[in-house]
Length: 306
Ligand SMILES: Cc1cc2nc3c(=O)[nH]c(=O)nc-3n(C[C@H](O)[C@H](O)[C@H](O)COP(=O)(O)O)c2cc1C
Image 1: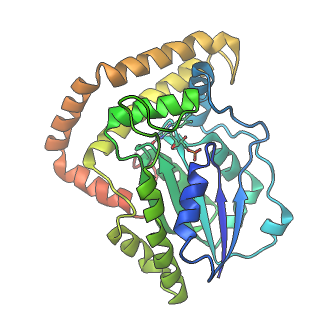
Image 2: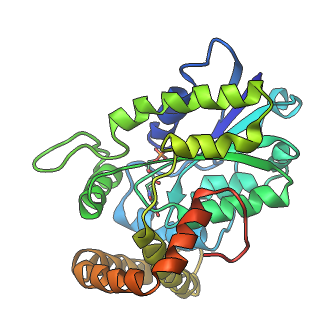
């Protein structure tokens, strides 16, 4: 079995997750790891201005240039591609979108693909966009594995801010370490065995069912409500900021910082109120949200669902 693992990562977390998934089967399969590399690397740690300035182009899916894959990879035929990516601002990270817009994305054509997401905890809309791209190049999505930081929402926000702006991942003060918990990363090994078993028995059609039974995707109805709200606001702000110029343009810095401040107020000050109204929405729309949860755990793609 020949597997291509194609991914982008800033901190190395996603590479760790992917290696863990494949750790139990690496002796039985042939694996090529390939990194998606933007022509101009994104900063890490970020300044606040750089970080929030990345929002508009991420949300509007304006592709950044990425380096082409080597011919050794593109001339190969793989039995399976594992595509690792992370959401930025509820959309695929810019290098991910950049890659999906290159001619190299045809590597997915007619090939089984498993998406692997490593993120804080908001990934639904990003996965819808990735599903859309994969559909447009005739890939066959056969699985999806999502690893999130399972700490309470505000805790994971504080730790991701410390990680992104200071580069500090480890625990300090009252706060735990940032990112996906180590135990969840090492536990991801179980998914590799399931993938291999399904491939060997030519039964990739039932793979997602078994991955779900192993807890590959954890999803609460509240996330659907939060993402619906967030994405609407991000689209408005993306357009508003881009009226003043492109990435890094000093003319738009004022609007970028206004967006940053309002987002932080919304998250830290208004969040108890908005959690309450989200809860009401969950109660009122319970049945349709439960249907949404079922849809988001599966692999089908319905354009415009979120
Ligand atoms: C600019 C930026 C925006 C992010 N937005 C989200 C988001 O919308 N949802 C989420 O769950 N995580 C978000 N994250 C966290 C990432 O998905 C990811 O977990 C983290 O950046 C580490 O990933 P990496 O080292 O594999 O690149 C964001 C990170 C960055 C840098």
